[in-house]
Amino acid sequence: MNEHLASSIFHVEPTMLPLIIFQLVTTSLKHGLNPSSSPGFAGLGLLLCGPFGKPHEGLEMATAAELILERPGMRSSTSNTIFVTQSFCYHWTSPLHDSIEPLLKGYQA
Image (cartoon, rainbow, N blue to C red; front, side, top):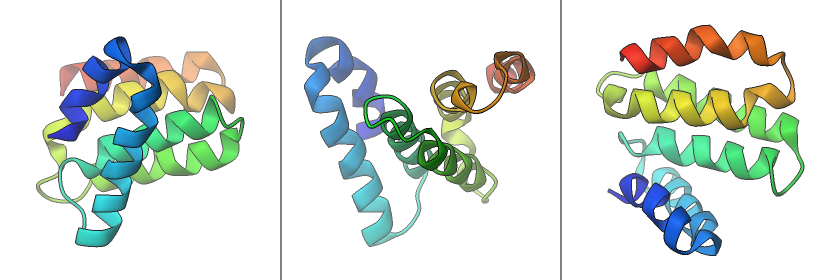
């Protein structure tokens, strides 16, 4: 449920977004993967690439988020996860043109 709060919290109180993302990732690591895990890891990738200035580590989290989507029962947050990973993580290390096809795939999901 917290992954749905992230965009609203960002608009109301942007400084709270990292706390929600850390809570999602910590909960996933402590209790196991669930459909909220992929947006959490994608958000962690966003934070690592942007504010923390570690694009390669952020790319690893974005890749982990997309790998979580491949597991059975985890597809409910496909569009959100692909949007975050492609828009905020991959462009740091690969050409922006490479993001068009995955973004269209996420839109159609």
